[in-house]
Each structure stands twice: as C-alpha cells, then as structure tokens.
Image (tube, rainbow, N blue to C red; front, side, top):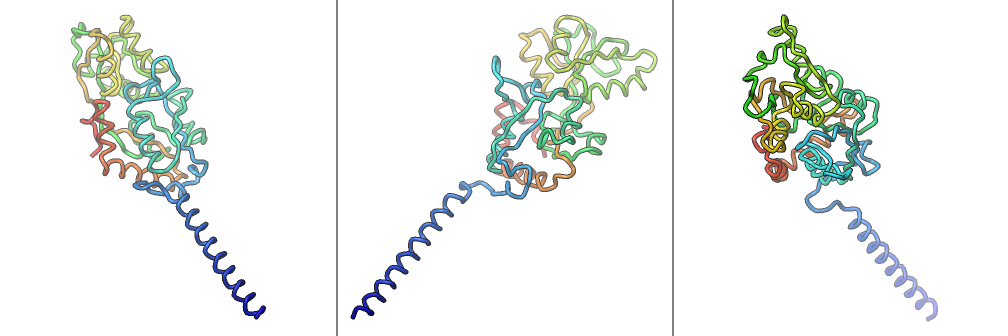
Length: 285
C-alpha cells in the first residue's frame, strides 16, 4: 500500500514539474518575441548587437537634420526616417555630430559610427569608398540669392568671376571646381567654403558673397526661414539621390537597413515623414 501511494505521488510530482517547466518556457518565449509588425533582423548585423545604431551626421542641414533650437536634440527628416527604421530593426538610434562633413566618409571607414546619414549625395567617388543605399531624391542644387536676384543669376555659368559660398566637402564645391575648368576657366568662380551650411547662408545674408549653393530642399528651406530676404533660382542642376552610407565590410547591416527601408516605404511611414517635412516630391522611386 505504501509503495503504490509513493509511486502515485512521484508520478503526480513529475507531472506538476513538467507543467511548470512548460509554462516557464512559454513565458520566456513571449518575452523574447518581437513586437507585432516588426521584423527581427537586428541579430544578423554585428553592429547592432549592442542594441544601438550609431549614425554620423552633420546636424546643421535643415530640414534634413538639425538641432532643435537651444538644445542638443537632433531632429529633421533624416532623423525621423532613421528612427522609423530603427524601430523596425528593434534598436535605439543615436545621431552623433561629425567633426567635419568633408571627412564623414573617412570617419565611417575608421568605424567611428555604424553608418552615416547626412544628406549625402551619391557620387561615383563616394561609391568607390563606401556602400550607399538610395533613400531620397534625386535632388539637385539650388542657387540661393538675395531676394530680387540683383545679379540676375539663373544658370551656373552666371557665377563666373563672382564670390559664391558653399559648405566644404559638398558636391556643390566639386561642381564649381568642375565649372572652373570649363565654362568659367578664364574667369573662375571665387569659391568660398564654410564648415556648415548655416554659416555659408549667413555670408550671403551679410552681402559678403553673391550667392550660396546647396541641395534643393535645403536651399528652399533657407529661403523660407529668411523672412523674405532670400530666394532660390535655377534649382535642380547636377541632380543625384541621397544615400545611407555603410562600410563595404558590413554586408549584413546593409541588408538589414535595406529591408527596414523597404518596410517603412511599404507601410506608408516613409511617405508620412516626407510629407511632414514638405519633401514628398523627392520620394525615392
């Protein structure tokens, strides 16, 4: 009698133990499951294992990326797109100010950041050094001038012989250098470069240069913020799309970002963000 009761007790105990283990496993699975609607792709990229996507950016290029007035909080279209992609990847997004936009590709290659996202126009020279994922555009270059266009500028050749501002390291500087070897060879543009776009715009406002060159959306935003002092002429020459920069030795991260970008385009988040910042005409096709 004693033996049978003990055996029955052992059987019941074993059953209860098994049930408890299964319940614990089920709870653990629920905790580790990704949120509904998000794709668990972060694990395939070593750069994302710490749960943070570190992004190098020149955060002075409104409305693409800029600091909220009086704060160190990055905002803008690029910031919101990156955050939406980070949500898909299940990671925190952290924007870091680069020391110099002209050195942003070198900084990425030196592994100071996981990626770079800073209104970077895709050019063959940059593609030779890093991978670039198209996400916006193409955009062109706008010529920003004083309202009324006192110099009558409407094409790049009109800049010959004039002092013209642009941010150092941008495609606008490259373009002016090319024009100085061609149409302006006998009367070159006096290229004035500055560390960031707001400083270049300020030089125009102060009358120290006759125009400032920047990407179309940025030139238009500068004009909008100038209280009627500035306007854009001759937009969209030298067009190119923007790209998210990834090191060539990070194929898993590139694939994860491409998948996240596709998902926010498919679910409408991408279009909503562009519309919020007035940039829907530049949606990537």
